[in-house]
Each structure stands twice: as C-alpha cells, then as structure tokens.
Image 1 (cartoon, rainbow over the protein chains, first blue to last red):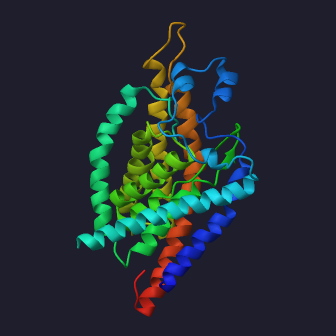
Image 2: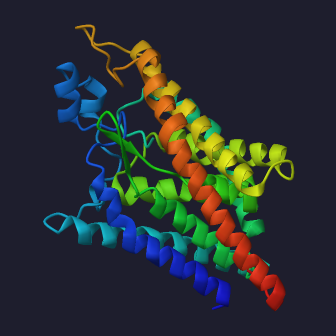
Image 3: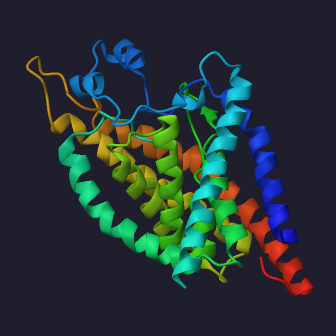
Length: 100
Length: 222
C-alpha cells in the first residue's frame, strides 16, 4: 500500500474508533421518529407509517446488535459499514480493470 | 435526513425512483471512469469517511440530532457525479444493512444527500474557488451542499399531509406540513449540521491537500 493509502486508512480507523461519540446524541434526527415517538407527539400513528414494512429486514437495525453493549455494536457497525464500502469499491475497480 | 419507509406517499417516491435511475446509471459510469490505481485509495477512503461521519450524531436543542454527510469533499475532488454515486452507495448500505433510511424511499434520500448535496457543493466551490481563502471556500461548499439537501428532504416530507388522509382526517404519511418541516429541517441544517459539514469539509480537504503535496514532493500518486 502507498504511504498515502496508509495515512488515509489510519484516518478512517481513528474515526471508526471515535464513532461511539455519536451515541451521545440521545434524540433521533428530526422526523426520523419511531412509531411510539410519533404517537406521543400527535396521539396516533399515520396509517402508512404504521403498516409499511421494510422491503428487506435490516440485519443490524439502528447500528445496534441485539443484547450487545452499545459501544461495541457501534464499533462493529462502523467496521462493517466501512468494510462494505471498501469491498464494493474494490469490486468496481476490479470490474473496470477486467473491462479494460 | 434519512427518510424511513412508510413516511412518503408512492406518488412521491415512485417518480423520484424513475428520475434517480438514469442519474445513478450516469453516476456509476463516471465513477468507473474515475477509479484507477492512483485514485482508488482516496476515493474509497472518502466514501468510507462518508459512511462513518454519518454515525457522528450531533445533539441539538429541541431533543433531536443530525450529522455531516461528507458529500462536498468527494464533489470537490472527484466531481459531482462521482460524489453522488459514492454517497448513494453509502446510503444504500445504511438502508440495507442498518435500516437507516428506507429502501422503498432510497431514491429520495439518494437525490437529496447524494445528488443535490454533491452538485450544490461542486458548483458553489467552482464559483468561489481562487476568489476567497481555500478554507473558507471549502466551508461554504460543504455548508451549501447539506443545506440544499435539507430543502429537498423538508419539501418531500412537508407535502405529505396533502397527499393522503384517512377516513378520520388524519394524514396517512408524514403528518407535518411545510410550515413545520422547513424551519425544523432546513433551519437546523443552516445553523448546526451545515456548520458540521462545513468544518468536516474544511478539515478533510486540508488533510487531503497536505498528503497530496507531500506526495508531489515524493513524486508518487495519491
């Protein structure tokens, strides 16, 4: 790996290590409320919000792995997410090389 | 700004999907052109940065939170199409694996945080580059990109009460109108998350320029 590649990877790894800082924020993003939060706000849950199921059930919903310490599940989520990004980008690079 | 499943009417997300598909195809082609042995480390790291920085939720007054996107950095360095693709890839992984943003409304999230943020940041940067101090340009480009994206999200959510009510008169989709979504979403991005994206853009661009310089001296590629 090039020296720059190492700097960049170190930078991403430091950020992943710090990612649990995001847990400090207790509230969700404005609008991205759960059904309970919406009910407590307006007294009902709009039909579509209540009945729409995700097309594919998320493996790690909300970056939380069931029963695991939130700190550790945040680290694992960040590693998985960043790892998937690199995996897809490597895949694209390989497919381009093959085509060339 | 990750809109969940069920929050939008199909009359919103279906046309958005039809519009997003050709745009994503162009963005994908431009990304394939941009990816090389030289660009790979930087391009993939900045895409991973976009994923990770979105986990840094910043609490703001009013009990909500938000985060930077990292779109402007990609847009300034690789152009708006490549940035839109890379941020959309991040959004897709977030929706698929982590349930952050709905898959059914992926197109809206991709148009807002992927395309609108990247293109706005890119053109603002182009307009201001070499006229003002670099750091200030980077900050403004980041701020503008995320604020522009927040307008799309605020409008998409805010029109939902007009698009369907049930027999008791309750909205079927997102229940708050534009009079609430615009100040809440755009306002919080103007003040807080725009600042976060601006600072992130400024710091990361500074870091990237520094390693590029070092490299130019050493005679290698990034």
